[in-house]
Structure formats: structure tokens, C-alpha cells
Length: 163
Image 1 (cartoon, rainbow, N blue to C red):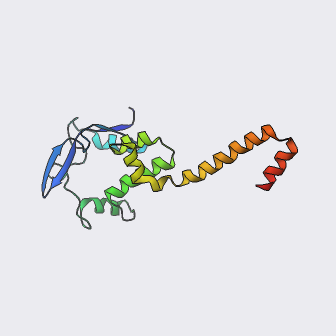
Image 2 (cartoon, helix red, strand yellow):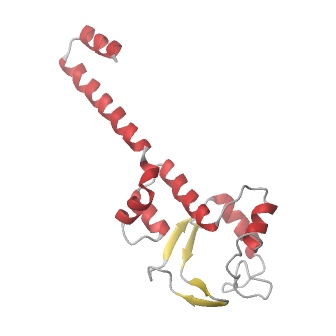
Image 3 (cartoon, one colour):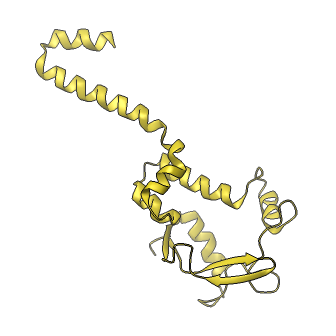
């Protein structure tokens, strides 16, 4: 109902064996999920029990790690008529979209399962580059607001024209 996926387990493939355990941080993670994904997942879950896998392999167990060029993930990408993309690219895209939407860094940290906001900022700092422009614009607005209090109206017009 809240459009969130709760990550409580992690399936890691070592050689050809899948090991189930806690997520990397050992904490459950809440991942906000857009409505269009929730709708598709709801259809995918129809007729399944609560503990069934949503996307099982052919054997009904966990999917194996995708093979680089011929695996299930690349076949799904090709079927969706998308450019080449990896699961990690999708994670980076989600982080990029969140940053461009102006999300709180602490919320992004929680979504990505990072140990700290500093780790999130260090990993994705290049995505915050536009924030530098926003700082300059905010300083301009603040300066104009303060100048308008101190200058006569004709002085403000000259200042604005000079910019």
C-alpha cells in the first residue's frame, strides 16, 4: 500500500550454488517503488503465496546470476528493446533519477543500503554537480533580496541590468 519493497533477504550465487542470507548491511531495507512497477509486480504475484519467489528460475528456485551476453537478463533487455544495460546500471539509474528529483541524501542512503550518507555522497557525488549551479543562483537571489532592502528602487534596476 505504501509502494515500497522491503528487502529482508539476499540471494548470493557462489560458483553455481545460491546462498540465502541477510542483506549486505544485515538490516532490512525499504525501497520506494513507483506505481507503474507496483502494478506490474502485483500482476506477477497473482496466484503466488507470500513466500513464493516473484521471478523464479525454470526449476522454480532462485535465478542464477546472469551470463554476460547470453543470460536471462540480457534476453529480457533485448525483449524490452532497450540499449545494453546491466543490473548495476539500473541501480545507478535509480540513484541518478532520485538525485535529479532532489531527494534527501539520507533517504537515498537508506534506499541504496549504504552504511552512511557519506558513502552515498562519495559514490554518487558526480550526480550532484548541478547543485553547484543552484548554490550560485541561491546566492544571487539572496543578494538581490538584501540589496533591494538597502538600495533605492533605481539602484536595484541598475544592479539587475548589470547582471
